[in-house]
Length: 244
Length: 244
Image (cartoon, rainbow over all chains, first blue to last red; front, side):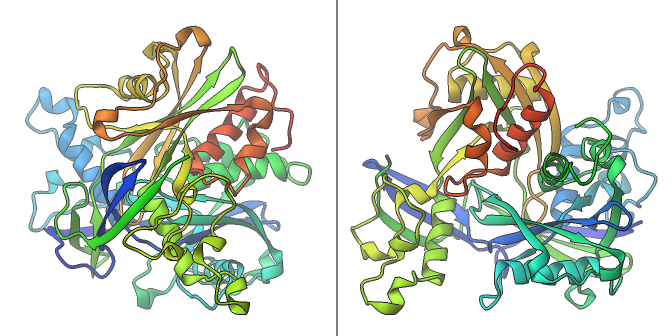
């Protein structure tokens, strides 16, 4: 699906996005230091289409995930490389019929398949608009990323939790939104002018748990958690037939 | 429980822990740039004590979470502040009978209660020992943090997922470990020489789901997901009586 090439990695001394801070503090009288970064809180939305009985997810190339796979491939050369000189890091990457590895500027054997950096996620967004409520931000993300126009009143809060505790410590609030084909007003896909290249993906209800536990399909824990939440809380209305 | 004071925040230009990198790449012919950080993969372990029918979690002060609460308190002054000049940021912090706010070097009204930075988490650790399997690393964490000595063969893999997709893209693998009081060989609490101040917390099975969805108790999504996973997969053996 994605063609990723001309990859170049450099140290980042000045970033508009990543600004490491250091906090010195005393904890019960002991001097301590911690390096961290401040990020925005976020919202995520489990979208269920009641017309097609599908969950609506987004799928996108995530450079940080791709680079993590690259590091893993470097650390763990494929077993076949022990027998022949032709083993490449690509062979260690998850199976995929899609994707192209980099070929220019770097040896292609260094770069995993592009598909290893593509993750399935809930529709989500940062809480970076002080004038909007969490529900209004969630509503905007559902519209921009997935193309469904749902009123704020249809968003049900599931719960909130910490999206990180080590490097960042932001809070994420998860919502549930039931939509129908009638609410679909565009193809979604994010804001191309902001560089978003998002693909909307439908996961049929009866395949949801198999999808969730298929580790060959990289995903966030939010997908896993929300699918099980749906199973346990929406089951009077909709049945997931497979094991959870 | 925790006394946090003498808090000082400074820009962090050189960190042994946070090393921002920048990747330039072409995606389907479009030039793109992304700032990210490489972190280790990790393991987490849902521990269930079959003697006391409790989940075993860890609880610790997380500076990044605390600083996130501090930012939130600054952005959202308490409503009472609109009426009087005495409203302080502390009033906006979650209710807690524990914790002390900072008082030296900074105005105490700037700092939330220490308890707002204390999170409930699954026992977890970084995959930073190349010679050990994921199961062996998980086993070590269960012993060091929670004091239970369980054989690797007792660890059951639940699944894996991306612990981050934006700033970092590491993978986390979650395990399930059944322990009994007979496996308890120490009080746990982490490695004090490494600065770990971890408290072991038991959550009774019958209170688990109420605990999971109580947003006043800051926690990771791993706690939520694993508790529901247990409910759905271990229910033939153990019953969670409350709603999930």
